[in-house]
Length: 263
Image: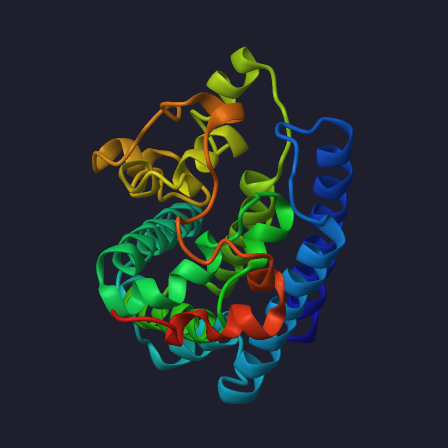
């Protein structure tokens, strides 16, 4: 699975670089926190989560998909359908699983304590898309493994889905300005920065909408879609109403957030 890791890492670096340049050239909002400090802390969080994940779960999701195929585990390893159809359905179902995982991380208090590390960011740009507590990343990997065990998707679909998930997380968190008409069309196919930004509002009624990462259809299907923030994208407040002090831009404080305060 060395090739799988190389493909995922290469695509991640490329998309992060593109989004970093794009949001510098066409910014949607003026950022009010030091970008260098935020990117360093957010990237450091990602590296810690990646290393921890590799130590605890040394097999990659695609490798686990190959194992399930060898053992005949999972729905798609037990039924006969055209390979192209299984590939497409697998990506769609895996994305829906991540949608519901995201909903649960908002609705279950102990999971929200972990996920709020992501929402505490007082700005939103491409680096916010990798700002997740290592424990949340580990739980997310276990959810993916559970979905793979139940569904039995082909390894190729798992690889493509992972690349899409990582790439879309960088894209839809980017502080990039798109023309309104273009955004309106694009969000029919993929979650756009303007669509996802609503989810990072300090208004929790808005923060509990637009859970999708890759595809926008689940929010529309399950009634969690909100087209625009009430205050508009320039005037809306980003983050949470707690943990807004500059110290929470530091890695040490970010890691401690789940353990601060009452549930």
